[in-house]
Image 1 (cartoon, protein in one colour):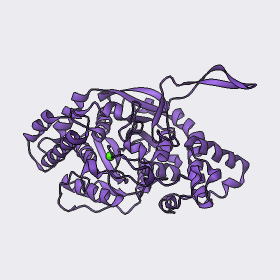
Image 2 (cartoon, protein in one colour):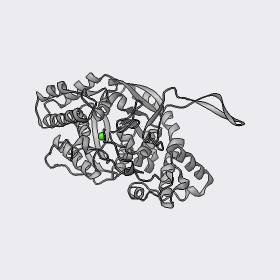
Image 3 (cartoon, helix red, strand yellow):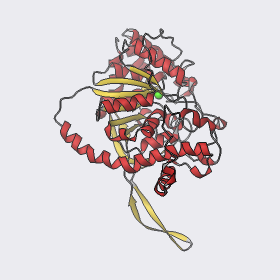
Image 4 (cartoon, helix red, strand yellow):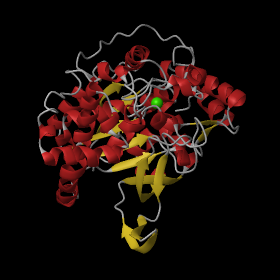
Length: 432
Ligand SMILES: [Ca+2]
């Protein structure tokens, strides 16, 4: 969700831009990504070509990186290459068969894993999910973003405790983004990430598994049934993909809060979740699975205002009352720093889209994540026509010789029935 503008010097030198990035190494541990085999495939010509191709896709130059960073880059690039080049066709081949097999099946709650950086609007999204019979929330995995990984885990545990849902697995994950320093957003979310509201200590315990490992395990346990709903930076999802690319065709779909095709909220170009880990986002966007992008284009239209708050304030319950405090804080922050008109319900809208896809309308687009732009790092660059001109060198100039099709990889949300969604949100929180 929203973050303050990050100072330029808060970013590490990116591996791909010539500088060593020692802080990259600690998060790609043996527990998170098994990169031990990267050295072996790099000895083959085909693998080196794959690395170059995948590195180009990820916007990373392995050539300039230090050895240790190169291993990490190779790991990322190999994983991305494998996912993009080998797994994607399987996904599409199996989609039709699965659709036919399930066409007449009775509707069952959708199994979801929410990857979250809680976070005020994360908290509202989690409460919405846990109070919606359409969803079967199997786990919350925590990623750093709005708050640190440690604060986020504490918040997630308090939220499942508030809802008396200790049966929901809550696991920590990455400690910071893949290739840059973390940017936290206490300005928008309060010092504790939950609008400075102090919830009671959690009755629930953290799952000891590493978040990306838990995601991998749950997907294999329920093939074709899990919907991933990442509402923070995409670090954990990228790590899961890199460790086990075979999850791609086994995931039902991915509904992310993040991105924008109409300008950013941390700066002119980038949305906060993508800005906080662009390399991870590029990996996730190009994995080859069905991915819906619930970005600023629709989130900024979903404004929770004083009238909605007055409506929710008429009912009471522990969750209802907590939500009222959080929303009161958010409306105050919007009045101070925002554009006016209400508080955008970014993360809840992604959950709302998982609950009822008819809330949004989408268009298929080819989307890449900018990772090198001076002003545009973290921008989601969408090709609305899914076509590019083919330029061929003739002597001292290029000549356009045709138009090449590019496959859409993202269902971009371009329209939303905002009031329908806001009423759904209030109705699910009322009296709880
Ligand atoms: Ca979030």
